[in-house]
Length: 250
Ligand code: GLN
Image (cartoon, protein in one colour):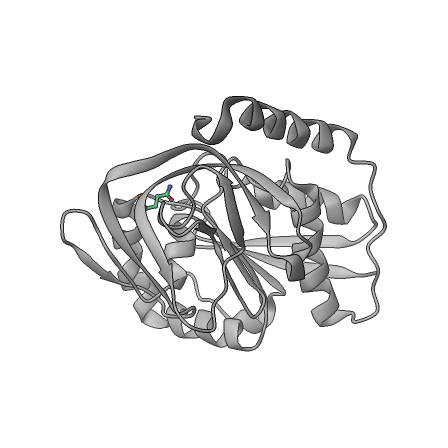
């Protein structure tokens, strides 16, 4: 039987706006195809051996939670995560988790948080939070599909060389509210500001991430299509609502 080992990093600390729903979504989409999904939560004080996992998920968190985790990351997890990213393991990181994969975050009130440095990007906090439903189009090389989500962040993220965005903003703010980019792609890392959770209402993205992780292990595995009637209806409804209201659809 095929099996995917999912590591949920800091499930009790980083879980905003139902980000954990991404784990449930991936579990179900695997099970519906007869693929076993093993999920392990790894939190503060737990050892992390990245060789034990195929896919890593990091949810969002507020500035406070991000700062709380710095010590624990420095005790070995940061190095493990850098290794896993370079070895092309698959990651999905949301908002605060996305920022933590980067080099640093300077909060709006001047705190400097040195993060994992697994992906070349940095974040600078601003006074005005970027909040609301938003929408972006994935890069062509990632399928070119439209993603709907919800963002709420003070951080403005800027990508370094060698890191490309997940996509281009169609409505809302995205990485920094200025350059129309959203999220980050580097090797097999998928990072986005999209809470909600993002995967249940974007089944094409869910399958893209699962396929990436499965192919690492089983190069010839094909994912059977699912019906996705409700998932597509939820997705289409959000697209319709945002198009109706225009770019300020919050
Ligand atoms: N603390 C970060 C910010 O405000 C991330 C918030 C979040 O994960 N929603 O930018």
